Amino acid sequence: MDIKENYTAIKNQLPAGVQLVAVSKTHPAEAVQEVYDLGQKVFGENKVQELMEKYPLLPKDIQWHLIGHLQTNKVKYIAPFIDTIQSVDSEKLLAEISKEAGKSSRTIKVLLQVKIAEEETKFGLETAEAKSLFQEYIDGKFPHAEITGLMGMATFTDDKEQVKREFLLLKGLFDELNQLKTLETLSMGMSDDFPAAIECGANSVRVGSAIFGRRDYSK
Ligand SMILES: *Cc1c(COP(=O)(O)O)cnc(C)c1O
Image 1 (cartoon, protein in one colour):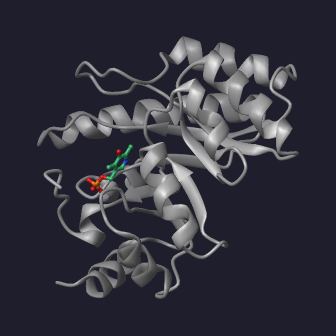
Image 2 (cartoon, protein in one colour; image 1 turned 180 degrees about the vertical axis):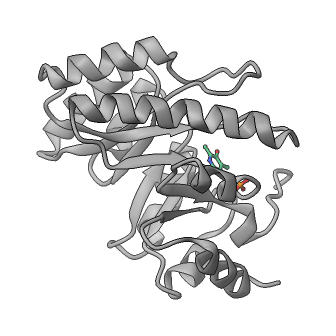
């Protein structure tokens, strides 16, 4: 299958109202351009350096999402143009995003990344931390950041019930926070588990290898 067939097949599987973030990490700008030319405007990258290399080569109306762990000292590089930072996992990072967005006279959309996987994972907020950070946000602490939703990654496992349990956990938190202030985006699901994520309430999925093919990390 080539990129065009892959992309079309994925698009055909997404119900109306579910956003596709095409995850282009490790793939060259030409591959991004190919998918852009098919009508895709939202792309995800997980590393600042790689994003900074591709950004100048590609159309300016692409909405870039950062989906990987972000160090506070790198926020300044992407603040002038990033559409959404999906991987906010600390108060310090959220404060820095708000500060740098302010310097660029912008508001940056962010998702709180919440730990839902039963397996040990390095990044993501505990549920309680996410709640208290959201409350600080409601209280006006991060004026140039807009929390538009939540992001989570399920355990990498063949156990479909476990994956669903984890997704439903995040859906529950989403519904709870949504009572306090309206949220738009529940980002969960990748190439292998996006249908399950959608069943569990995701309205945004992050799909990489099912569009662009397998990643080669040896280069
Ligand atoms: C790489 C990545 C994806 C996409 O993974 P695929 O399995 O290639 O679809 C989604 N979300 C995050 C956070 C990623 O790092």
